[in-house]
Image 1 (cartoon, helix red, strand yellow):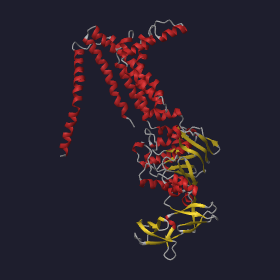
Image 2: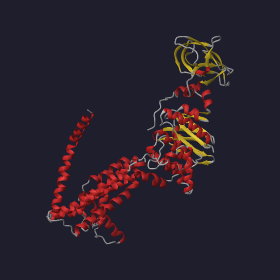
Image 3: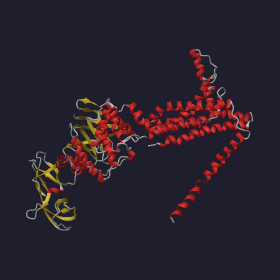
Image 4: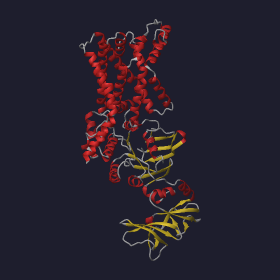
Length: 267
Length: 363
C-alpha cells in the first residue's frame, strides 16, 4: 500500500517536471550535441587567435568579478545595516542599469571614455594628456562597461547576504571585546564567505557571456562572444564559431559546477 | 564595582520613549533583576548599559568611569543574549575563547582559561560541537561560559531562560542562582518572569512603561508594594479599600479596623494589600466570613475563592489538611497584626498601569 503510494507519487513528480525536462532536451542537450558535431566533423581545430580570445575572456571576467566584489562589499554592508531612508530609492536606482541592453551600456561608456568622451576631454584640458586615445575601445573600456551592470548585481546580491546575518552576532562580538575590524574578519566574513564566493561566480559568468557591450567596444581586445559572432555572421565559418562556443560553454560549466561547492558548507 | 545609571532616557523616532528618566544603582558584586511586562523598557535599559544602544539623555557609570559614550568592546562586560547568538561557524570551544583572542594573553594561557571555564560549566565534552549540534540548555551554558571567560566586570543577561522549555528553565534557574552566588561580578539580569526575579535577585527593579516603579529586595516588594500594579505583579493580592484615619495608624475597611504596618501616610482613601496566605481559619473568633465559590486542592494547600458580604471577592490560601467544599461558609481571621497600605495617588497609578502580563516572545 505504502510503496504503491510512493510509486504513484514518483510518477506525479515526473509528470510535474516534464515541461522542464522537455525544455532542457530541446534547448540545451540537442543544441549542444549539434554544436559538438559542427565543431568536430572535420576534426577539432583550435588556433592561436581562438586561444587568445579565450584567455582574454577569462581574464576580463575574473578581473571584473574581482573588482565588483571589492567595490561592492562596503556599500552592500552599509545598505544592509544602516537605517537610511534613502535606502529604498538607492536600491531601486541600482536595478536600472540591470535593465539596459548591452548596446546602450556600450554607448554610455563611449560617452564617458570614447575619443571625445567626458573623461579623456577633461584629462586633456586639465593635465594635457592628448585626447583621442579612446580608452573605451580597449580592455579598460570593457572593464568599466562591465562594471556598469556588475556593480548593481553584486551590490544587491551581497546586501541580501549581509542582511541574512543576524545582527546579534555582531553585537555579541562587540560585547566580547571585538573592535569593528576584528568583527568583520572573525564573524562577518566567515559567515558570508559562501555568499561572496557565489556572487563572484555570478558576476564572472555574466561577464563571460556578455556580448552587446563588447560588440560596441572591443576593437582592440578580442573576446570569445564577439569572435563567435564575427566567425558566424562575418566569416560564415560554422566550425570556428562552434568550436569557440564550446570553449565558452566549457568555462561557464566549470564556473557553474563550483557554485554548489562554495555553497556546501553553509552553516 | 557599582553600576550607576542617572536620568537615563532612550527615545526612538516618532517619540516612542522606551526608557524614561531612569535612576538606578546596581550594587557591586550583587545580582539585580530587572523585571517587567513586555514593552516595559527593561531590555532597552540592558542594551544601554551594554553600549549596544546609545541613550538619548543621561549617563552610565561603571564605578567612577563614565561609559556613556564608550562602545561595548571597551566596557569589559559579558552579555548573554536571549537567542544566545553563538557564532554558528565556530565550535563551542572557539565560541568560549572568542573574547580571549582580543586580549594579549599567550595561546597556552587562553587555552587553559577556555578549558577551565568549560569544565566549570560542565560542557567540556561539547568542545568540538558547533551551535547547530547543541540543545537549548547546552547553548545556554556555552553562552554563559563565553560571556564569563573574559572575567568581565559586569555580567548582563537578557532573558537567558526564556527560550527554554518549562522543565529545563526551572532546573537552570537554580543553577544560575548558584553561579551568580559564586561570582563576584555585578550582575544585571532581565526577565519578564516574576518567580525568576524573586529567586535570582538580591534586589529587584520593577519597570513599566519605561520607568522604575520600585527597586527593593524581593521580600519588600512582595510585602510592601509601592502601588497596585506592583501588588498585583508579584503574586495574588486582595486589595481591600479603606479610609486611613487622622492618626495614620488605622484604616477602616469592610473587614473592620486594621492597623497599618508603616504608619504616617496622610489620611484619606487607601487600599490594604492582603495576600492570600495572610488569612486563616478562625472558628472561635472570626474577623469575617466568606462563602466558598471555588476551592482548588493543590496538595500542600487549598486555593479558595470566596465571597464576603462586606468586602466582595476574596482569595485565600489554606492548609491542605482540612476539608473545604464549595458553598460552605468559612470563618476567617487576619494572621498579621498590621497590613500594608497603598495611598490614593498610587492607586490611580496602579489602576492606570494595569499590567498586560501576556508575554510575547521576542522574534
